[in-house]
Length: 208
Image (cartoon, rainbow, N blue to C red; front, side, top):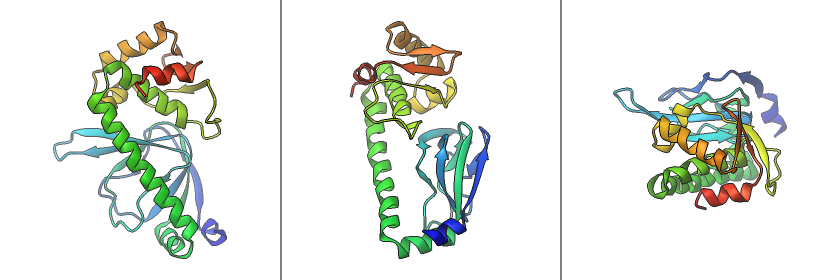
């Protein structure tokens, strides 16, 4: 791991910065240190769909792939630690522990994708918005105690992006956020700063 650290570089990017381009040649991989990364897929006619979000300490990129299959963009200010492709692939061969960590993340992402399919396919608009907020609340701060019953965070996506991610209209997202606020499930200040005083209540509203 010491040799890997010697090849690393840390940097912070502003919201909207492209970290990985779709079909771009892969020459490095990054560990997310802070912030939220938005993953999207595009069709040939330019239509785009948000397919996932990544948080610290997620690993951004797919080893042994020549080209990226997604577009990754900083949804917030994002700090990453980047490593050359060759160094990561060599470390995977030399360190079973490191390889296990990447495999575990890949399996976690598969589980999350399946859970999100259920959210999109079966849940009501209210449950979808609550599920989105719950996902952000649980992941945006890597230092948060998993047993914490309250938290605060800034929404990492615009209302339009949230609507895209959930398969809803912007108006529906706004109505459901207002409903959750009226029912005292959340508090919202300055349009984006969210306070959750009772995580259990938010979980129940998400249909978990």
